[in-house]
Length: 199
Image (cartoon, rainbow, N blue to C red):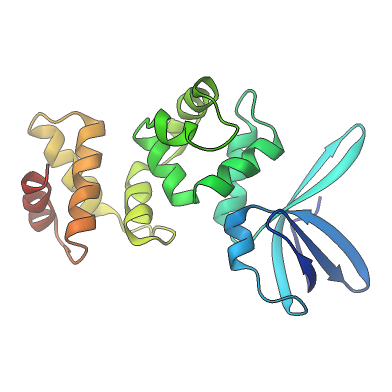
């Protein structure tokens, strides 16, 4: 299986990239998120590849970041979600936005993506929620970047809110709001205070 391709970006559109790897041209399907990260045509480029094999075709799906590829793999494991639909989801939502929507069971947010109905969005939430780290999702959505693994403050703040009687989903949303409003909060006590004041 092809894990990644590194070569020269010959052409790009919002849905397809053509990569020249030592004289061989690979047509790679991409999301809008990956398209936004591609260099100019004629530049060196590396894409992480998911090689999809079926009876009548072999298709390559490419991603600018490993995290997006991993989310794609999780999505296509969901009943009723194929590679093209998974790519549509990742074109409509960033990995951080999708992770947060799944962790919060926000079916409405996921079903806002073109081609995703309410039932499919519900399946995505049900089948992937246990595979998403809610603390990393909150941190990633707040920073706009892939979350770093040091989420002890987030975890402890959510647990503190739960001990005060707040449901898990609401506690996560309160922490997210507090991080958005006060991104410099570094310790649990400060973040908890902000979370209680912004609920």
